Length: 306
Image 1 (cartoon, rainbow, N blue to C red):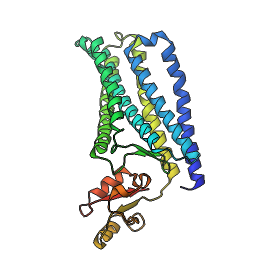
Image 2 (cartoon, rainbow, N blue to C red):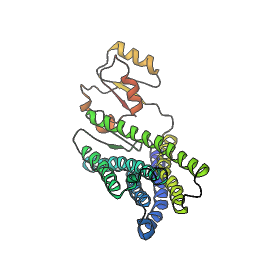
Image 3 (cartoon, rainbow, N blue to C red):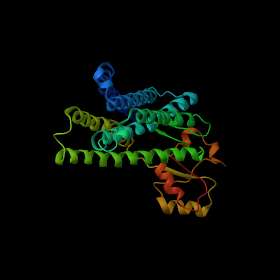
Image 4 (cartoon, rainbow, N blue to C red):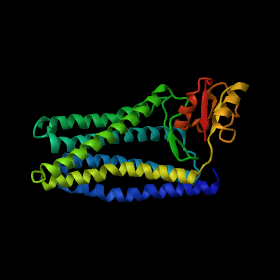
């Protein structure tokens, strides 16, 4: 990455993370200070989500500073930060699913299933959400389960040298996010249909206000992620990925060129016998491209570098 591009990349993403951080902090202070918000389970969950999102923003700001100053993050620090970021992301998804369940049970199901709003069940669900942070965090501290930062693309990813556990965790995160999107869409559509057609007079103003605030709050992490991804693609531009193969034969080189074209792909230039001989920076992958390449049965080991 050129110097000007790197600086623009770091400054742009740093300002974006800082702007979202400035928006979040006053809201969190109100949630912590005002006693009214401590009486509602929904507000308590919102506070947890906010804290986790703020911590993720702090990590993004730290990474932006590393990009701007061209500082190499030490492997031990990167290991811990990557584990923390993974744990925060998993836990935040679980808390948002919990928040959706809270709105569903409080507004639509409490009349028929009062146990769904019981204090005991809430404690159990809070415990599950805390475990969804602790378990991924500890797993990412294992030697071959990484989540590392690439300063050239300002992206976090696991390594192709990792155990299958990293791929499983990545897929689990995707499925959890899909569950959240589907469940929340159905839940809030049902709530507003219920309010509009059946029970607008029965729903308290407090519950209605909480529901509106919950919908606004649950969109913040998604908006933040989309903004960062959008800025990432704008700054990165259309620079092609290099698809490399290990110990290639002539027929494999030809097949690679036919599949991706001579301008968008090239045989890997390093002579290595194993992926473990690659540096962490070279071995960082673009997951979608790697999945596409692995679908070709003629290749045994591949790596995608940017």
